[in-house]
Image (cartoon, rainbow over all chains, first blue to last red; front, side, top):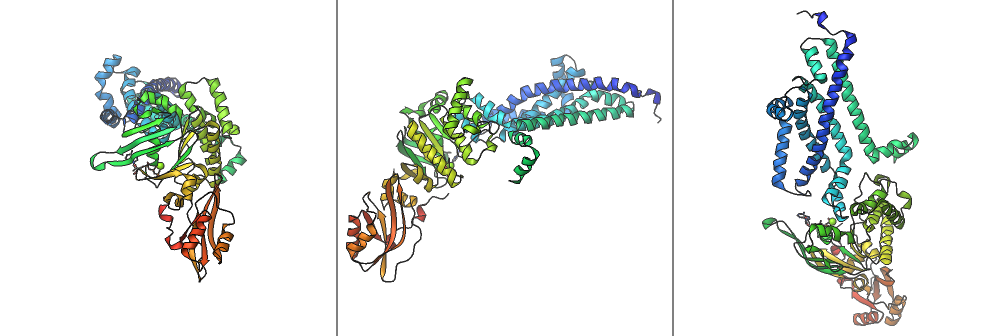
Length: 244
Length: 338
Ligand SMILES: Nc1ncnc2c1ncn2[C@@H]1O[C@H](COP(=O)(O)OP(=O)(O)OP(=O)(O)O)[C@@H](O)[C@H]1O
Ligand SMILES: [Mg+2]
């Protein structure tokens, strides 16, 4: 099979093709992550506190929610996406495009992030909850100050992983015509064997993921007093600090 | 003032049922430091958590300043707990907050204005000697300094009762001494009732007015420190001042164990004892010190050829109790395991 060269996108037109697609991806992932954080943080905190030893210990409810989350986590994204098409159509009125991709992505993302938040909260020393209680905190104050705030660096670390996973999902969603960089990769790179476009999408995806990781790492460092104060020391005293 | 009435805590049901606290009855007066000691697993931490109602007692009651905490709802408890300051073992500081922000926590929960909070926090940090460390994060502070931040935080809402569970455990002797001095100063200035839980007998001797020994959820012995130290029959007294090994007596002498049982022991009792018995008395080992201004201690002596009855009565006239050494019980079995 010969590659019909004249079918390929000329090099000069690649930016005009790829950058709007990247913007679509960023919008898609941005909307999804907003929903994921808004729902996942309260849900993760709830699951954590329904568990044994939590603030609102309730084994029955904990098991129920935990199961639902696990189901969301265990379905491969492509299958999840296909299986909830009626639901997606009910919510968005369509089953293609960005709006339609956001629904399954948000569901998968929430399930993922709930576990991340739950796991991060588990890492907070239980004494801190006792400290908060003994200091007269209400349950909401306890969750905010003793749990979420203390777990913040770990949650941000998880959020980074989650965001990168969502970029990947957005590429999968691209295959059902959701638009974005995944759609370009599939229609030009895969269906038309346009290797230049394929390469461009790969470069862009790698750069996007790397930037997200960089920003995430940076935020983790900024929210961790230990590493932040270390970083602020001049080099000489940092060496001293590492000696003691 | 804290009073416990028949305080009982049971964990588990059926086969798993364990009585961790068994009908405890004691009270800590205003201005008193009351120590609770006991081996690991005795129920000390459970006791602390029952006093500030982080754990609900199974039965019996906890009264703080006359108010029965065990009957309050969760919401009322939140208010009542503000009268109880709690110092935690591993300081319990929030790692992402500075010393000042940690001290401000209880004020923040209460909804105190930012301005008032700032003033109060500055005052508290000054009080515990950390005025210069307000902006430091916990990892930038030493163990003793972190514990001071914990104390400042416990005092934030002006409690009348202070609860301390192993506050000095794991600190070096110097830090322990300075924390103990701080607690005593706070007790004197603020008239706090302090319930001080520890397994370190040394610290008890430094800090407490009274002490109780908890074992398997029961208080097996309690009393004022000085009285326990003056009572040769007191196991707790012996555990507080264990007899160390000493030299053995010369061949012709017998060994006696002498303890201070009154406030009126003359400093030259050894000379007087020898003079009145008309014999040689050799000092084999001794541990004598003042606790709260009262001299307490014990000594092992070797006495050559004296009548036992006579020796005991002469010793008694000097404010001492003398026993043949073999009868002295080893203190080790009473010392709690750390
Ligand atoms: N939540 C719980 N459920 C069941 N048993 C418990 C619970 N908490 C404590 N216990 C039991 O209660 C007993 C007393 O525990 P506690 O922590 O009060 O001991 P402690 O005197 O503070 O010991 P340590 O000196 O080691 O701190 C232990 O046997 C422990 O196993
Ligand atoms: Mg304990």
